[in-house]
Image: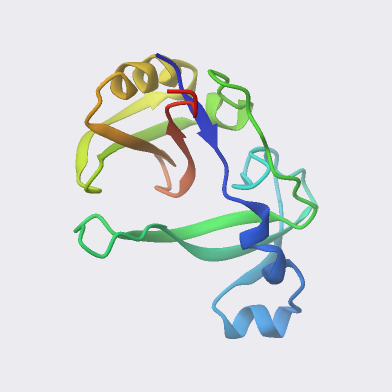
Length: 159
C-alpha cells in the first residue's frame, strides 16, 4: 500500500488571488507577506512561501459533509504565484516532512476513525498503515501546533 498527497486545487482559489485588499477583507480574508522561512505553507503548491512573498490568508472548508459532526473549516495560505503541486505516489513533500503533523483518518461516512501526532519525517509509515484499512477513505494532514489543514492523503487512483 502507498499514498498520494493531494493539494488543494488552484482553480478553487484563482478568483481570490485577483481580489484587491478591500475585497479580500469583505470576505474575511487578508493579503499577507511571509515573514520568516517555513512560516507560510501554501496548500496549493505544497511549498513554503519565501520571506517577503505575497499570500492570501482565507478560511477554507476541508470537511464539508453535512451529515458528519467532523465538519471543519480553518485558515489556509495560498501563495500569490502558486503552481498546483502534483506529488508522485508515495512522496511526502518537504513542507510536510519538516513539521509536526496531526494526522486524521476518516471513513467513508466522514467519521474520524483514527488520529495521531507524528514528526513529518515519520508520517509516511502511518499513512501507509492506515490506508491499508479499507474502511479508511482519506487522511487529512494538519499542522499539529496551529491545527491548520495542510493536505490530504489517499490511496493512489490505480487502487
